[in-house]
Structure formats: structure tokens, C-alpha cells
Image 1 (cartoon, rainbow, N blue to C red):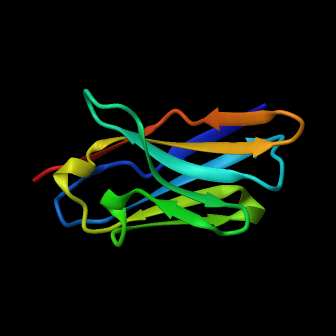
Image 2 (spheres, rainbow, N blue to C red):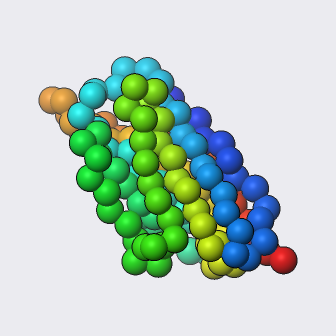
Length: 118
């Protein structure tokens, strides 16, 4: 079993910054992908950014140039640095981890609320 714990969500003014963290624990295959997703009220959950254990990254177009995903493999922790936040970034942010052994495994955290408002 794998457990993911997010932290860092908060209320921030437009133009501000936040840093989210997500720590994974349990039986984790070393080759994996960790990602951040978000879901705003009335909308479907969508990918924000993802990073492989090798360091390759992928971003949603709406956050390119503003958000940066990084990870510490030794700590099985992924970070999301969010700058120049906009009201439309308001959502519940959840992290996940995916890896493949003889089966594909995906685990999710409980989510953390990010609210961008003046």
C-alpha cells in the first residue's frame, strides 16, 4: 500500500505564490511518475504537471511559465511551486503516483485546497 500526503494549500492573493508538497510512503517502485492534478467546482479533474523519476516534466498549457514541478527521489516527495497565481487557479490540488511492475498502480492523495482571491 502507498500513502500520499499533500500540504501547502492556502488562501493567496492574485499574483502571489504557493508551494505544494506531496510525500509518498509505502511500497513504491523506484521508476515512477508523480503528478499534480486539480479540480475546480463544477469542472473535471485535470493534469497540472507531472514528473518522472528521471526528471522529465510535462505541464498543462495554462500553467506553463508560472508553475514548476520538482521532486526529491530520496524522500519520494514531489513539489509544485506556483507563481503569479490567478483566480482561475483556485481548485483542490491532488497528487498522484503511478508505477508499473507486473501491473499498473496509481495512488492518490486526499487533496489540498488552493484559493486565489483578493
